[in-house]
Image 1 (cartoon, rainbow, N blue to C red):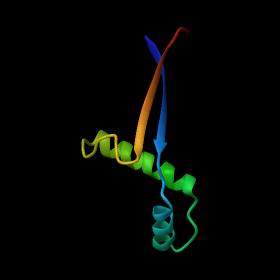
Image 2: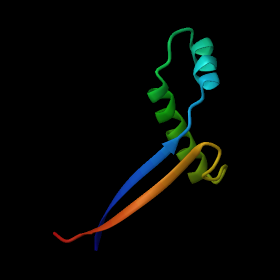
Image 3: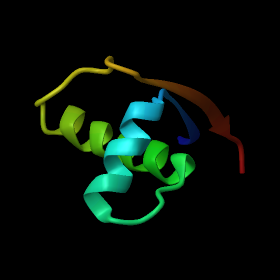
Image 4: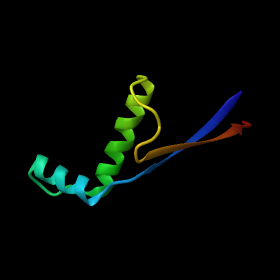
Length: 68
């Protein structure tokens, strides 16, 4: 059987996190890019069993059977 798995991350990015990221990298940081980075980072941590889904990052999986 084949399945289509759609993953949705809900990520909270605070103004403080954006400010710290700007200071650290010495240039403006797009909050959308920071949210993407946080989602990927948390995904890796969960896969490596170093973290759980919490702390401003939630994940949802929608699984649909593929019929062809």
